[in-house]
Structure formats: structure tokens, C-alpha cells
Image (cartoon, rainbow, N blue to C red; front, side, top):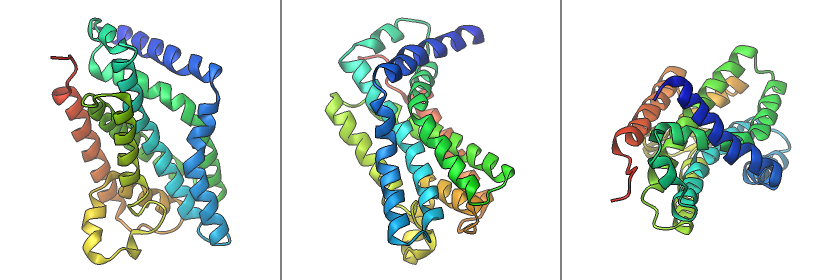
Length: 245
């Protein structure tokens, strides 16, 4: 399949699964805002504004992770209920093209929230270079969480299980770890466990760019994120159960 055909396939999936549903049901945009911005608001009020930078780093991490994992729920629905994946399997479209097409359609819904968070981070004094670094972290974390969502969707027996699994993974990755707070407050024996999670590294990098200091060295943070991206993409490319037995 040529590059031009893959791009056309990406655009078609984005258009039919992203733009059209967004116009028909814009409430999903508000749903993307709900949990991350609720936690951000609670932190802001409870700390009298002092914890706002931590809240911004956590909200950006959580939204990016959610947008990736939502892909798994949608893909399970397209596969089990709509039988759409059967059509895709019979076409020249490969798993990665299909995954990124659906992922980009999800990103359409989440882009307003991400733009607002970047504007708030800029208001905290982040430089253009820092914002560019944040964007790079968002891309790596988004690809990682999207690949995880897609991989686990293949093993979901129904859409309800897919929703529960991805919701559980979201909690494990973006609520319990040091995402809305510094890793320095964790007991020392939990720090190595937290550091292997890509969301911990992403939030630590966001915290550093906002001016809270780097609780994890930036180089090691990017290395962990890049390794997570490569591993999860490899799972999709080589271990994905693409066709039903």
C-alpha cells in the first residue's frame, strides 16, 4: 500500500469517525474536559492556587492518556457491534494505519482541552522551547496509550469489558501514580515502581517545563517514554490479533 493511499485511508477514517460524530454529538468534547479539569479545579481551590502548576501537568497527562485509551473502547465497539473491523481487515489497510486513523479521530475531540491546557501552561511563564518539549511529550505519551488501548481491545469479549478495562488502566496510569503531585512525596520503595510508568515520566517533564523543577532527569524521562512508545507500537505491529481465528 503506497504512502498516498495510507494518507487517504487515514483521512477517511478521521472524517467519518471524528469530524462527523463531533458535529452530531459535541457533548463528547465536554466529556473529555470533565475528569481532568475537575481534579485541576479541586487542586486549585484546595491549595488556594499554589498547586495549580501540578494540576496543569496532571491534567495534560491524564487527557493525553485518556484520549489514547478511549481508542481501545471505540475499536472494540467498531469490531464487536458494528463489525466495521471486518471491512478494514478485508481491505489493504494495515493495523497501524487503522489504529492511527481512529486515534486521530479521537484527538479531534480532545484538541480543545489540550489547547486550553497549553495556553494555561504558557500563562505560567513557560517558554516557546518548553512548550515545544511539552508537545513532544504529548505525542510520545499519546502514541503509547493509543497502542495499549488498541492492543487490549483485541482481547475484549464485549464493549462493556473494553470500557471497564480501559477505565481501570486509565486510573492506574493517570490517577494513582505521581501525575498530579511530585514523585518526591512517595515513599522511597515506591519510586522505582512509579518511574517505569510513562505517565510518571510525562508528568515530571511537564512539571519541569512549568518551573517546578525536574524531579526526574529530563534525559531519562524521554528515554523511558521513547522506550514505552517503541514497545507498545511493536506489540500492535507484531503481536496484534488482527484477524479473528
